[in-house]
Image (cartoon, rainbow, N blue to C red):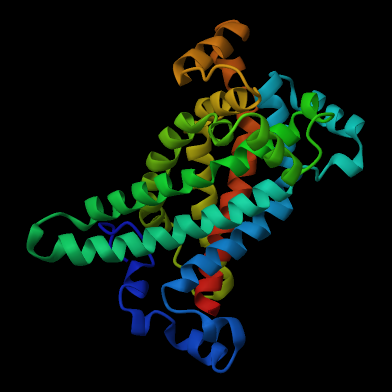
Length: 312
């Protein structure tokens, strides 16, 4: 793996006819899903299944984190709120992140591969543009495209906020209410912090996961590769989660509002900053849980994605 390339697996995926690998071909001869997937299509499928696995494991942690972001309370108090809400509400709001994450992670990995192939074909030949720059641009484009699915994040916020429990019943009801009473624009409240977050975080994720994996002890077995991919994805996800945490606080605050004026990103940040006594520690409340959740989430996503790529 060359450090100059953004994706440690790019060598494997750059030539469609070789991208399944010997083990993949032997595993999939005559089998349904693998046989049906094109070399490009499998990046979307693997990303989607990886995200599904992750959401089912980490959703309750995400709910605790969301309460901390929204109300600035300690983890114990946030857990207490969920206990008072009861078990039947624990997975309330699961469908939006499940639909959103399985789609956005599929888009993240799939479009990154597609944009990389297109841009490398168009730009790299004789243009003198380094592959690193081309792949960075591909990652930013994929991250920006993900923002189209932000309404799922918007609905998840409303369903997780206990102040709206009486008003919004489920995913479909929330979408219907927002569209009927406020229009499409309301579904995209909080879009700016999402756009600011997605492009740069994708660039860093795809740009650094190759070099980070190269620093880990070389794996000689499938289990070893799985551990390395988990560590690599987890460390990157956790670091990026901390780096972009204030933007997620702003997004949660903006999206907890229904109706009314659309306030600028900076204004929402200053409101939260003043409410929390101008304290950086208070602004980052919940960041330690976000760190552990991201470590687990992106470890699961990266390891599952890479494993599925080898299997398919």
